[in-house]
Length: 117
Image (cartoon, rainbow, N blue to C red; front, side, top):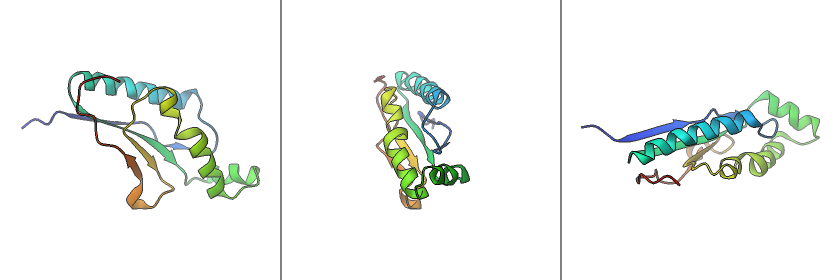
């Protein structure tokens, strides 16, 4: 039995600063591939996210006079979570490594239709 599904993920980025064109590029490229598979009626799962556990994040927080959790929560909520939507990318899941392990992926059901949105 052949299963007609497709999954793709962007790199999980460090959040020591705001997103730049390289982050946008990987999201756009993954979205193009996702839409291609949806047009062929494949169920798709498009995943992106952030890695909040890095020494770069701690240094950036200290430079701004914030504790790491406050810094990471603010920058993820203000800049990283909105990024796919700003590019109209149809991301299904967002990995948030700062959350407890059983809730790392904030996801909605995979798209089952072949319509590109």
